[in-house]
Image (tube, rainbow, N blue to C red; front, side, top):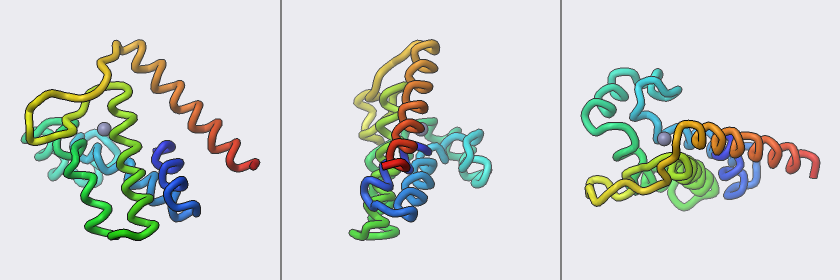
Length: 138
Ligand SMILES: [Zn+2]
């Protein structure tokens, strides 16, 4: 969510850009019933998770079309796209996603041990907080 806010702001330098980027960064995990959006979309999320699995269609090129469908070529659309992209990239840094779904040519991303996952996750979190504070004071 933090990376989405930064990415959204980068694409559309405003509070709206940050909010859109942060919100859209949550969308790919709708395929996980336990995620924030998964709770909101209960049955749909469970269906996605059981039917296609986690990190498949909602972590692929398909989800990248969503911002253009809703916002078109507007600053909000770009903030949304960068928000979604920030999620996919950060997932690839700590795990693997099926970027070219439905092609089953393999999963893309780094395979990390649980310890390394937690370390990278914490580092990215504190770097994002540091970046937001830095930008706030600039
Ligand atoms: Zn994800």
